Amino acid sequence: MRDTAVATWLLNAADDRAQARGQWDETGLTLLRCGGLFTAVRIEAELVHAAAATTASAAVDGYLKAALLGGPVFADRASGRFYALVPPSAARRPEWVQNRHPGAACLAPQTYLGVPRPDLAAPVPAYRSWWCVQMDGPGALCDVHAVSQLCSHARHRLAMAEGCDGG
Image (cartoon, rainbow, N blue to C red):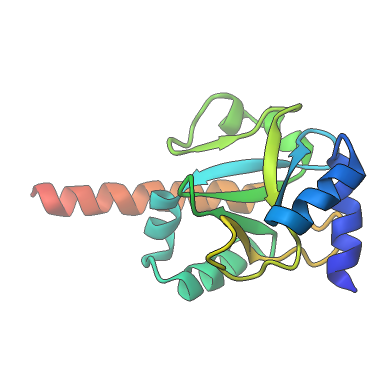
């Protein structure tokens, strides 16, 4: 029931709802437009793994759920990135406009994003993307402050690791 409600809500960001639903059925992925209902913060896997202090998928998922207060995040195996769905107003926040988080970027309005089908909640070899943290319901997005804190924490951990390796 939740997946159906989330899918219906997400499809409001599609140019063609029927085509998008068909793409989800065929490939598990469809292109949705950022800027109306949501946008996304694209985070390099290196940052997420540094923040979580692990690359183990289940542990990373648990970390993301806790750190992002249950907000929705999906992973893309092909690009090696994670995407945290946030309110569209996040794109205007200074930390994203001024690129204060190397390795992370807030997608601009009108950017198309490949979003996995809401029921893909674990890595499946046939699909390139899955939800690490599923949406709780329509419109339930990540807190943009929590996403920014995760990125800052990751950069700090990476800097500390580099300092230990270089000293």
